Image (cartoon, rainbow, N blue to C red; front, side, top):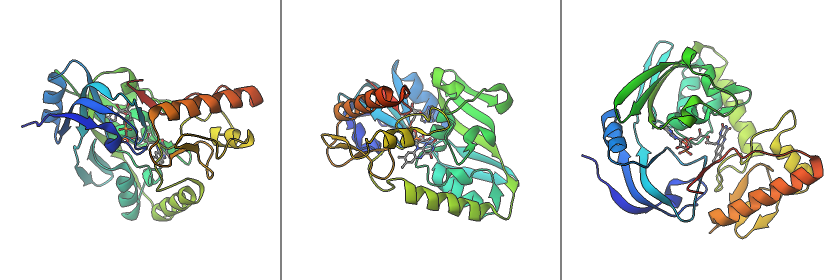
Amino acid sequence: MLTFQKNQLLKDYSTWGIGGPAKLFVAVRNASEMIQALQSSEKTLIIGKGSNCLFSDKGFDGLVILNKIDFCEHENSNLRVGAGYNFSRLGAQTARDGWKGLEFASGIPGTVGGAVFMNAGAGGSETCDVLTHVEYATKDGIQIFARKDLSFTYRTSPFQSMCGAIVAAKFELTKCSDARQHQLDLVRYRTNTQPYGEKTCGCVFRNPGKMGAGALIEKCGLKGLSIGDMEVSLLHGNFMVNKGQGTAAQALELIEKVYEVVKEKTGEELQIEVRKIGI
Ligand SMILES: Cc1cc2nc3c(=O)[nH]c(=O)nc-3n(C[C@H](O)[C@H](O)[C@H](O)COP(=O)(O)OP(=O)(O)OC[C@H]3O[C@@H](n4cnc5c(N)ncnc54)[C@H](O)[C@@H]3O)c2cc1C
């Protein structure tokens, strides 16, 4: 049976540590609970680890559904994984077992559902590269989509304009003796170049072209710029760190400031990657 809670603070479900109360909040552990939750409110928001969301300080005026559908079935080169499964763990686990394709996931602190929704990627690889099927819940039941019928681009998926929930994904990997070393190299690079372990939401802006957003922001001398408790990381220009009690209002002001300075100095109009919720 589903347990609905009132006024859960979204900052407790955000890697940025930002966000006001959800009017209603429920955790789901399987596909039928997800369908039930979707049927129970007109206004819903699905969240995984909240590692790519900027929740409003006012919170969310509807039902927040926390996806805890957490299983992983592996048969030869095929994987079927619950959308609440930890994407980073999946990357490390498959690489350790000698499978190539998801090494890049190691270090991305989201869920499998969030990764499919965002088409998360790193080091030249993207989630859609190894995805074969998506199991998708709506109020009416489950639909299965084949990868060949879905079009993905850089950090976008067709699910961004749909109103159901990813409940599971299937991937196809290939055997490779170098997979583990590749995964370890990616993690080492990540921990050396990103403020890992601090309160962030990953990259704030999409990379506009050859020169990444982080390099552009650094070139404009914006590393270390802060508003309230929100600061442009000293390590990576495209990360903003919540140093303590940062708020969505401060994050938005800092994002706006960075956008304006980069536009003025380079002509580039950066686009935000992080999902604004209730803003
Ligand atoms: C330190 C750090 C490093 C990062 N590095 C990377 C990186 O290298 N590459 C990269 O691409 N991203 C990176 N990110 C961003 C983030 O981890 C990814 O975008 C991740 O895929 C988001 O997953 P999530 O479960 O946290 O999604 P959430 O933040 O919970 O949600 C993100 C969006 O997806 C939707 N959503 C989530 N789950 C579902 C579902 N099951 N069904 C339907 N909609 C859903 C939400 O409604 C929301 O709109 C990083 C973040 C951090 C904090």
